[in-house]
Amino acid sequence: MKKQIIIALALSMSAFSFAQKKELKAVEKALKNSNYGAAKEGIKLVDQMLESLDEKTKSKYYYLKAEALYANGKGKFNEIGESIKLINKIEGSYKADANKLRLVMFNNYVSKGNKTYENKNYNASSFHFERAYNLRKTDTIFLYYAAATAVNVKKYDRALKLYNKLKNIGYTGIERQYFATEKATNKEVILDKATRNLYVKAGTHINPGERLTESKKPEIVKNIALIHIGNGNNEKAIAAMKDARAENPNDVNLIISEANIHLKMDNKKRFGELMEEATKLEPNNAELQYNLGVISSESDVVLAKKYYNRAIELDPNYTNAYINLSVLVLGEEKPIIEEMNNLGSSRADNKRYDELREKRQALYRDAIPYLTKALEIDSKSINAAKTLMSIYSILGETDKHKEMKAKVAEIEGEQ
Image 1 (spheres, one colour):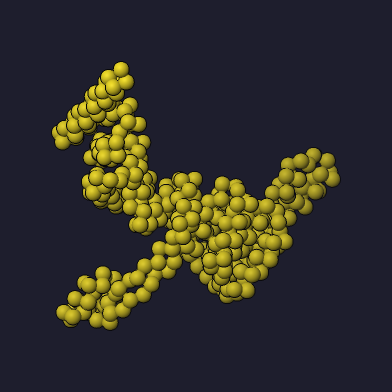
Image 2 (tube, rainbow, N blue to C red):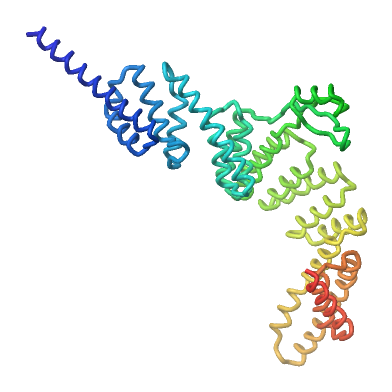
């Protein structure tokens, strides 16, 4: 009896194995005919038998399923993702076939990534580059491209995930470049080593050399911090900023970014310390002084004026510094107008109204020199011209108002 049961069981297993091979053969045939729908349906039948597959058959199953889901690049988004996972887990007799398919897929996604990037479809480009990386993780540059293109379309959460992955794998992006000067143009060109040596030998290029590119790690940790800032995750931003500054402690832009976080958190003491640190590093940087003025204007008008004036001292033609000084002056108008609007009609109120009106006009007169200087430096500054036109109208200076009105029309006509 036992012998009969064993024989029956063996016959059953043989039939089961035959069914597996038959279904996989049908899938293979469908793939040869590019009938990916039929191939997927056939794979579903084998899915149910997965646990019973031997290692060789399982390797074939994974390979055929990966090819069916990839569908020559036309698979659905989630199917492509699963296809890549399958390719990465194939071992055994079908590993060589899997590697051939991997190369086809890799080249396809690199090509698609480049093409969509050139067409400024950065969202699609980002996903194509990420897939290229997932297929060949030694080519970490494509993960970097995926993150950078995600930033281009403001997909910051996605970019953050990719940047963190780059940080965790220790990506630096440092490459050895080979270069030479082209005689015909006298311009330096970057080439692969063999081509450069060939050109130098041929005499078309001179001054060969090589160098390492700068690390992209400071940029990566900086972008992680800036994304946290944008998301309002101040504590994470500060932690990330510390990493960024550890990579590049003398980067003034990083110092300003960290200072800005502390300002948002109302930590004015730390803000001031960082501002001092930045100005010590670059005391003669007019743009830095201007940016410090912009940041300070949110909380300290007196300090902002100091920074704007310092920017002008360093660069007398810094148009925006003059305009922003006028903005600070005119910003004092708001409480005056509010008080004027709340006054009644008594004699005392009328007297106070006249005092406030004179005070308001004095502000306008204080702003005029800044705006005039800005327009003198940049004759196309529409903001300066429009503000001056309004001021002269309020002050009742008719001739100057007409002059500015004509100036505004001239600038707008040229835009």
